[in-house]
Length: 183
Length: 178
Image 1 (cartoon, each protein chain N blue to C red):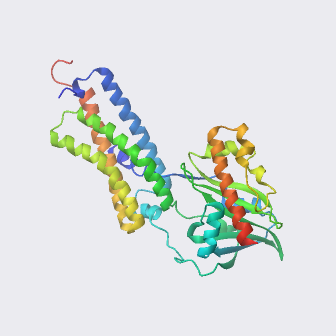
Image 2: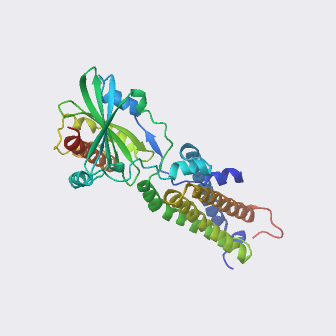
Image 3: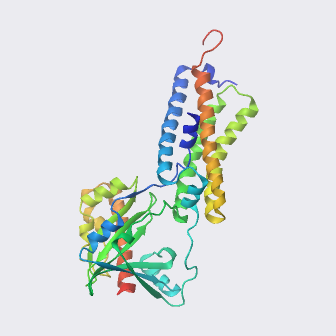
C-alpha cells in the first residue's frame, strides 16, 4: 500500500502528529468538562440524561392555579446538570457530524499504519461505533430506561481507547526506533 | 495516560451551563423589598396553552407557568418569573421582574452557556436589559435593536433571543398572572 506512515515524508508525519496532539488536548479538556457536568459513572450520566419525572402528565380541563409559600433560600438550585430532550436533539445535531469528521481523520491515520487488514478494520469500526454507542446510550437513557447510561459510558471509553491505540501506534511507527537504514 | 485519555473522551458534547446570577441573587435584585414569597403555579389547559403558543410561539415546560410573588407583610411588592430560551448555542435563562402596576421592573440574565456567555456579557454591557424597564404587557421588546449599533453580530443575535424570552414573560404575565 503506497500510503505508509512509517516511510512517509517528515512533513506528513508532522501533520499527523499535530493532528493527534490537537485531538488529545481537546479530549483532555473534554474530560475536565465531563467532571463538571455529568461525571463518569452510569448513575451520574443517567441523572443528567434520564427524563425528569412528570408530576402531571395531562393538562387540566381548565387552567388551574396552585400556590405555596417559599423562602428566599428555596430558590437555590442544587439539582444536577440536566440535558432535556430539546438540548439532546441540539447536541446530537451539532456533535454527531463533528464526531464523524474526527473518526474520519483517525481512520485516515489508521490507513497509514502497518497493521493486518482485520486490525485496521477493527480500529476504523471502533472510532465510528464509539460515538454511535455514546449517543444511542443517551437517547435510550432518555426514552427507555436509565440503565442504558452504561452504553454512553462504554461509548466514551471506546472513544478514548480508539484514540489512544491509534495515537500510540502512529507515534511509535512514525518516530520510534527502526531497524535497517532510515528513509 | 491511557486511562486519562479514555476518560477525556467521554461526553464531549454536553452543553455546559454557566450561572451568571444565582436564582436567589436574581430574586433579591428583582423583588428587593419582599420578605416572603408565594409561588404561583399556573397549570395551563390545552386551550390556554394553545393561546399562549399562538401569541409568542412558546409553550412552558410541562405546561406550567410559575410566577413568584413578593410580599412585605400584607403588601405585594411585585412578581417575577424565570424563562428559558433555547438557542442553537445552548439555553439561556432570564428572570423578569414586574412592578405591581404590571410594568417590567428589571430583567436579569441568570444562565448562559460557556459559548454564549461572552456574547451575552457584551450585550448586557451595551445596556440590553435597561431597554426593557417599564414595558407593559402587550409591548414588543426590542433590546436587540437598542444595542445593535454597539455590539457584534453574535451579541446582537443573543439580544434578540433575550427579547424573545422577555416577550414570553410579558405575554404569560399579562394573560395569566393578572
